[in-house]
Image (cartoon, rainbow, N blue to C red; front, top):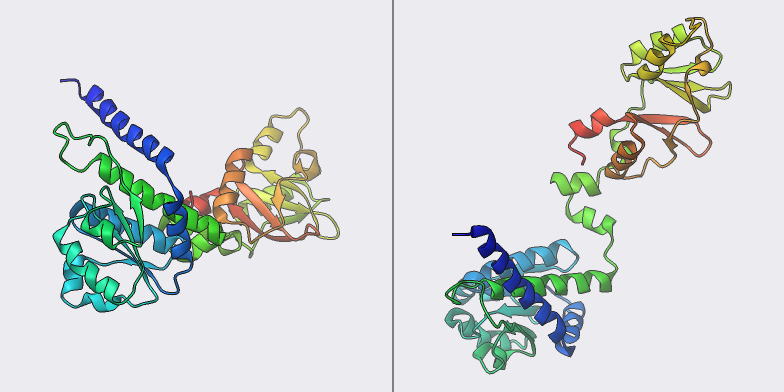
Length: 320
C-alpha cells in the first residue's frame, strides 16, 4: 500500500474543498464580521463533537487576537451554563448537519434572550440554519475519509473559516504585534513578542577602554569582561570600535605584531550597534545572525554606550 499517495490524495481533497469555499464567500461573511465587531460583550462559540473541538480552537484564536471569546459546550449550557450568555453577546454555533440534538436544544433559549446568532452549517434549512440570523455555509462535496463519513474535509473547512473570521477581525481592529504580545506574555510567543533588548542586555561592568590604549590593555580588559570582546571609546566616551577575541587571534598572525600596538590597528572600526533598547530581543537575534556577530552594542543616539547583548544570552533565555 502506497501511504504517500494516500496522504497526497487526502491533502488534494481538502485543498480543493478550501479553494471551492474561497469562491463561494458571500455577503453573509461581511455581515458576520460586522456583527462581531459591533458586539458589546463576548463571542460565545458552541458546538458538539468534532464541531465542538473546532469551536474550542476558534474561541482560543479569537480570544488571543483581540476578540473576547469563550467556548460553551451545549450540554453544560443546558445544565446551568446558559447563564454565561447575556444580551450583549454574539453566539457562533457550529454543526455540519445543523441538527445536533444538544446544540439544537439551546437555540430557542438563546433566541429567547434576543442574542444574535451566527450559524455555520451545510444546511440552510436545518434547525441551526433556521435559527441563525446570519448563516456561513460549510459546503463540502467529499470528505477525505475513504468512506466519505468521518469529518475531515468538513472540519478542515470549518476551522479555516474560523481563521478567516479571526483575520478579518484583526484587520478591522488594526491588531498589531504589540497587541499580540500583551496576550502572550509567557512561553515562546511571549519571549518572541514581549521581551525587549533592555530586558536582557548587560549594562554593568562592561569591558571598555580608550582608543589610545594598547593591544595588551585590550586583552586584559577582554579577559576581565568575559564577553570575548572589548568596547573602545574616544575621549568623549563615544563608541568608535570593537575588538573581539577573533581580532586578537588574527592580529597575532600579523607580521610585525606587537602587544604595544595601538588597539585601533586591529579592531573593527564603527562596529554594528543599535540605538533602540526597546527593540524586541527576537529582532535583535535576527540582526546578530544576519551579520554573523556574537555581540551587539546598544547605545543612545549620541553613541554613548548603554549596554551589550550577547548571542549566548539570547539562546539561554530561549529567544528564537
